[in-house]
Image (cartoon, rainbow, N blue to C red; front, side, top):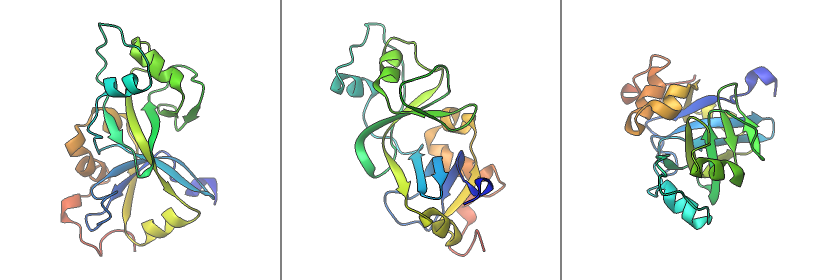
Length: 187
């Protein structure tokens, strides 16, 4: 795959006819995409747990004045017990993947310890699990009209209300996702 064909730092917007319960009406940030496959984090499916619960499970102590309200999402069906922090870059963490000048993905404990003492990145979300595609699988799914791809923006990742992200991601490219049918999209 040529570099220009990479969908890294793009959002995958599930088409309305996607029935897979793992991806129905999801928006996924593609963090890595190359000839071997792709890795993404779903950014609009709340996990139903609190940040504090994750810190407690990892035995990271929180100060009394802890006030970070970082959303926790189900990032995808692969390794749902593994944590990922999608964030604005602010320092070098032990294990980070730089997605763009404005976004990074970190899997190391040090970022959570920094968040616990209010020294973490300016904007962040925590995801449990990730979405993965094997070689050429994502390209085939896009060709089969399973996904729209749109540009990633910091505002959509961190500031847009969760229940508006699916429609907002499609609207970035002028599409009302609610009006699409199974035959719409890539031809």
